Length: 294
Image (cartoon, rainbow, N blue to C red; front, side):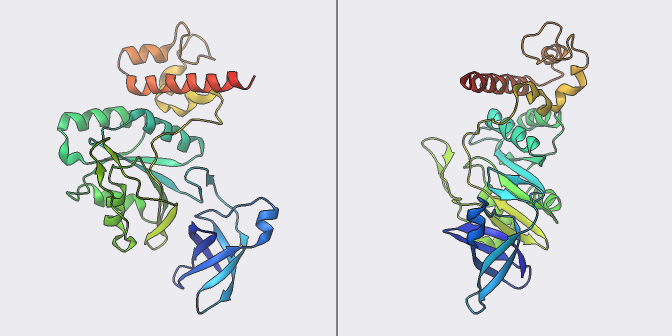
């Protein structure tokens, strides 16, 4: 039989057969010998060992279109990254790191700012200015007021989507709205540190429609940019492209070189300074990593 792994937990891989139920499967030893780990999102072939208890063994992992390290998953079509417009205030550095990580892996990303019912119009306009300028669709939503949810449903239809974002921004509440049968736990926001309590403990695919899955992931509070050459980091900031050809040097890294048109665009507010500053922070981080290798 064939199916898709929708959850990996305690040594079992739960395989959805799209209409014939979910089987709890073990992985054949051959995967361990070949150092292959089945991932949530893998399309697999499995043999049934107990029809009554719906148990089986995964015997083959079909070819992956892609795979992610965090969240550990495969065959992802897109990512929907959720941040709160306020409470907690959005961490732009964390968001930009996530965008770089997804772009490096070729995953199209949509940004959703939740809780717009508690912010002013000028705050929404500022968020829109920062991220629409760099080529991402930005959705402004309120799970509590059911605002923006229909657009989210349209985007998710027929796709396998990573749902990601830090704790406390309303991801679980959004999941409950999109998939009421998922019985997701909604965590209380910690008043002491304005950070959500961790409620998602493992990566899992939730079916929200025919051939439509949401990959809910543990909330993250930090991301480190790795496996990127510092000289290539500029390629992950698409708003630089329009101006980079005007730099004095073709190899301009847009940090301290004279005649840098990208830095000039930042000064004239054609490129958002928040994004540029985060680029510089990531560049310095990659530079430090490079120096530690030698």
